[in-house]
Amino acid sequence: MKTENNKTIPYSDLSYATEPTAFTKFLRTFFILQIIRFFVLNLKIMRIVVGGHS
Amino acid sequence: MAKVLILGAGISGHTAALITRRKLGKKHEVEVISPNSNYQWVPSNIWVGMGLMTPNQVKFELAPVYKKLGISYKQAMAISIHPEGDSTSEKAFVTIKYLVGNKINEEEKIEYDFLINATGPKLNFAATEGLGPEKFSDSVCTYQHASDAWEHLKKCFEKMENGEKQRFLIGTGHPMATCQGAAFEYSLNVAFEINKRKLNHLAEITWISNEYELGDFGMGGAYIKQGGYVTPTKIFAESIFKQYNIKWIVGAGVSKVEKGIAHYETLDGEYHTQDFDFAMLIPSFAGSGMKAYNKQNEDITAGLFVANGMMKVDADYSGKAYEEWNSNDWPSIYKSPLYDNIYAAGIAFAPPHAMSKPMKSKNGTAIFPTPPRTGMPSGVIGRIVAENIAEKIITGTNDHKHKASMAKMGAACIVSAGYGIRHGQAAVMTVFPIVPDWEKYPKWGRNISDTVGEIGLAGHWMKLFMHYLFLYKAKANPFWWIIPE
Image (cartoon, rainbow over all chains, first blue to last red; front, side):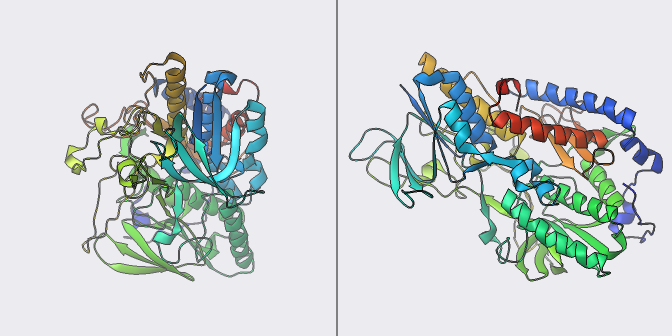
């Protein structure tokens, strides 16, 4: 998501938070990587689901 | 022939109904009592609240599904439980009151051999003065509330398009509300849609929550691996809010809402107000308000339920101090300690204590989240309760082979952060176990390998995929049973 918030207010709560770089934001919607993450995260969830109850 | 009576047809009750029916076959009777005529896939209500889905896309009628499966169904409200019968009958029963049809407002006794209380939460708007869709704030807790919220939000967007600045307040509407996750994703979706419309300069979005820190989510926060560090979810949540330009107020208990003004108290004991043009605030949850009576018609409600109306199960309700909390405090089979044939599933069971550390303001007001147990845990609990009851009926033994303690199972939560097949976003969060276990995992409270927080387009696809998958399952379409909770 592109934001138009280019001004930091010193000492505000927001000013102390980490912010993703443009590259990180690009990766979050980079189609090929996200397809891989889709399967990886689904597998991770399935492992939790299956192991979570007996 | 045995009869299993299920009160409620939400995620937990409906799961229990489907599984009980499948396990027991047609020899035994399964009956569902629900005040709602529809099943709703609650996680997608967020998108209804943004006008991105219609209510019809997140709900369907229960009656045809139950007819197909041979489950009796009555649209009614359970009023009281009589586990020992009454002066005229030895058989346990529930008194219900019809809400529609020829029998509207009539009461009826429904007998049972096994009872599953899956009545879910009562949305307790009345606990906060001025809160709720009928007063001064919106909600996304039901598809109707979400649809109404969208109508109000749409007007705000129209005003912004005409150059008028708008203030949005999103979060929890009671000092002890839960379900921070739903409010969190709603705030992100509002920010995403405002950004899509290029109206950021006219929007001021504020998150207000009873969490001690951002990212607590009512589960005491979590630690996740991220960018070469293990970081608390506080960092994760702050980072998302910074990217979406959302300010936050935490440790805040909303005490009163007026037209355009929310009053709240913070943990330091100070009282503040926050102005808004649009507010979506999650209410506190309570039990359904059912009563219970013994054979002599004496009120035994306090024996079956805790004070807020949630049902007591096999948990430790001794009221231990935070330092003494233990994973074994949490229930694993969800059976009433008083009656062997009564169970509570989903939000209807009373948790032994919070997961977040209890906090009080300097004025003595308790300001902290109560534990979340929506979505995946609700479904899993509904499943194991149904499986245990079915096996009890079939084998005649009193064993409970199936267990699902929230202190021993994980959960996945997909937090929508914007809708769109190419540019949508969602944060995938998994935790294992749900309840932090500081004895077993002294460093991070949970298994750090199974605790994930990741934001991206894949998460949006997953949330959308789960929307269709779980509605398919809930409709009991072919091979529904191979889809896990």
